[in-house]
Image (cartoon, rainbow, N blue to C red; front, side, top):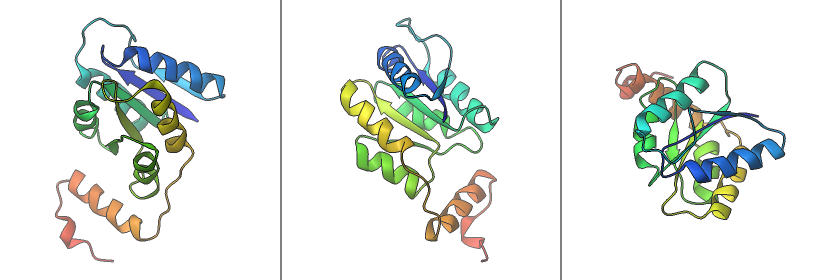
Length: 154
């Protein structure tokens, strides 16, 4: 899988370790800007990862900041991105199977490295179930286009 990873200064160390792990497992990893401890603004990293996915250069993304919240808000502004803040393996799996999330956002301050690795494994090991969830994704796409999702006719 082609995975884009980005982090602000609070998540850079965790992102480096995840990138190494994913590469060792045979994944192609693209790093958004430098992963260092120099202060930076998370929206820039979120945009880079989001754009890498929306342009087709990556299949999925991982964003890490202090809480994961800021990254999620910023990444979801990129057309076609469905970024979810996840805190455990179950929320990572459900973000994929039910919401077809293509980006997970992690908290460097609240999660340890081992749980992050388990979360990432769950995320990349899951796939979208489709079915009843398809209609909901179409409605999300309508919102992205500025349309009222209640007008969807099946």
